[in-house]
Image (tube, rainbow, N blue to C red; front, side, top):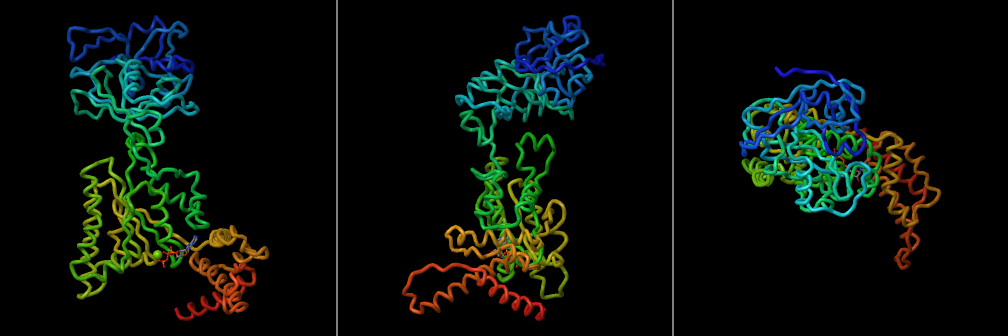
Length: 499
Ligand SMILES: Nc1ncnc2c1ncn2[C@@H]1O[C@H](COP(=O)(O)OP(=O)(O)OP(=O)(O)O)[C@@H](O)[C@H]1O
Ligand SMILES: [Mg+2]
């Protein structure tokens, strides 16, 4: 067993942090000398100094006169990886190189500009790789550790996404090895960084170009959705959280992709609207939208074929592109008609059961498919076969309710936006008052209230000018809204009586 020792950590916050070396006093360093033999060039063995910190991270060590005996100078990136802060004790052991070899055959790093680092001249990925190898040659890299590289006036934050040894060992120990000139180094960047490091591999963002979560509110207004920003914000985080972080972070945090979500709630609450709109924010293939009733109306056998076909493109893409495949979204609108509890009805409903079975088979068959996401909507969650809603299937369930007063006001704002922009909304229109008077209204009823008000205004214009000779724009007034409100109340009353 290598002997271990506690040392006091000193944070390196000057230029020394960029070397990624840990620093020690001359009196301590000799204990950490190791003979590393390259597995390729046996003849040339070289003495290096290395230590294993907290059994997690292997660092290369250099002597530094400013460091006192018993202290260890470390940069912030190593401290973060170890979960320690300045002044903490750190456990250090002599590094014992594995007998089978230490050379990395492949090192994959995710690169970003360090916070606050301004962008200078773009660099070529091949030059970046050369600089990285020159700077960190013969250092040991552990999966998920971070390093800073200063190059071309920029400071780059690099995270190890994969570290594969030339001689693969089958052990649960962290993946790590020594960077050599022979190591294949792959630089990966997000699409927003692709111009900064030219020619690097790009990992796709889950969001389409030009959209990020900060602009969600504006984006929803432009999609004519009101009063749902915080709920849609939460839905996106729950459904796509694992896809919003870089691949290395998803792997490090052991995040599992959610395969499907169910939006349920009363009629007209905006489920279909949300399902379609979320797709417009994503960097994904055009969603396949199927209405449940359309599938059940198909002939015996054809429904199952239809369901199978929906998953074809995703399967093909996964085979061809693996983790780099586009995301495929399938929307099952009104899924209650194809996902009814099996065995609920006798005999003649075997067709429905077969459809559910087919759907389950397809969803389960996609275990290895990381490129698929199902959005189902229903206003009858109680009718659904529970097997569909289990973990690994349509597992995320989100209730979409009718809006409160503030939500109603925001929906009215969005629905009247075009008239307001064209100065066709009279000053006397008090949307807050209308919101106050529409308790229990769904988004759909509010949207049709605005349409109805518009019809009243149009009618007035036609009454004034039956031949429609005067081309005049009509203004929406509070009066039109109040008449529409009266009318929609009567309608609501009638539908309640009918129920
Ligand atoms: N939050 C909202 N903002 C703006 N418009 C809305 C909102 N919610 C609903 N609407 C309007 O109501 C219409 C109907 O909504 P949608 O079809 O999404 O309801 P649903 O919940 O799917 O209903 P169902 O259960 O009957 O299928 C939308 O097309 C839109 O015009
Ligand atoms: Mg709907």
